[in-house]
Length: 440
Image (spheres, rainbow, N blue to C red):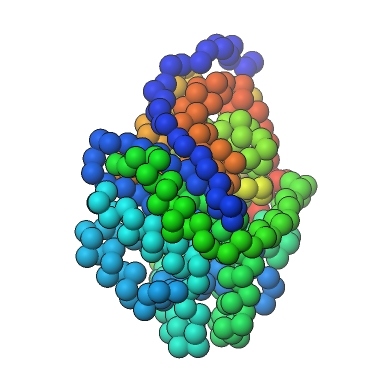
């Protein structure tokens, strides 16, 4: 019999932010978040283009283009962006995701205008030249060699699991890219990619930290307001229905010392069904967060079937990083090559236990408190805050949502987690087995 469920919403700390929203005439959405507690600012620009936006024959192009955006711009030569940030005592970077690409700087607050100028200058016009393209093509290819081809478990499972779990090219292809596709890219392709996806109306700018909101908006208008208005591309729906039969595949890894497995499920729409997604996120915490978690106790400590195991939502472990579709992944490494079926049975049994019997007293509150603490801790750094505001504004349509997550998580019940577990059945999963060759 299921345990009786106590309906309660625990009190959890919720951050408070005074956010100011503005949209420029060219369509750029702006979020400003003042915080005078430290003399630093974060500047983040997110463009609504990522791995899923790549056309067939252009795998890896979104990531390649991210590299090109650092190779000089309308008024700056190559490497000048780097020098201006570093000479100000700041840091910078960018990254490519499934649904967006970001660029960001953390700077002393007296260098705020410098950061805004730098981002506006490359939004206006990056230097797309034959030399820059050839140079960054080699950089990306070497990155693939180092991070994927010549590293144990390189790209596992995020590169390979989508090809088993999903059907469409947008959702299933290799986001790092194939060498043939990368090498066939031209400057005309890059310019077309910029013209299509890097319009101000297809971006969100978030500025957080030691600043005055009105003064910051005036600076934003000065530097970004004159960028030519272009129509934002219409984003298609990439949604796919849940599986109705299990799928399996294998990959060989010559460098891996022991086998591994990734189990993937297509799960709730992160934007349209956020509360369902939050129940799944809490379920992953119950399954694998810490030594007291279900899969750690069962598969690592008791049965010794695996050396480690993890469960998470989102291709890169961030459940709020993607629109529909997204993935719940359970991954593990194990020493016995013939242990896979036993591992799958144990995972299924633990999910069924949660679906049938619910959770132990205090189990949900424990993992929920840890999750909220992690969310709040991640917001401490001003650049992390700017990135989160921009991400939630772009992906979820509301930067304020990040501050509401503790309350939304507090409302999730044991019944919600049980229901989430009941959806993760064998007929709705993809199983990718990594066959190790490094110990041969």
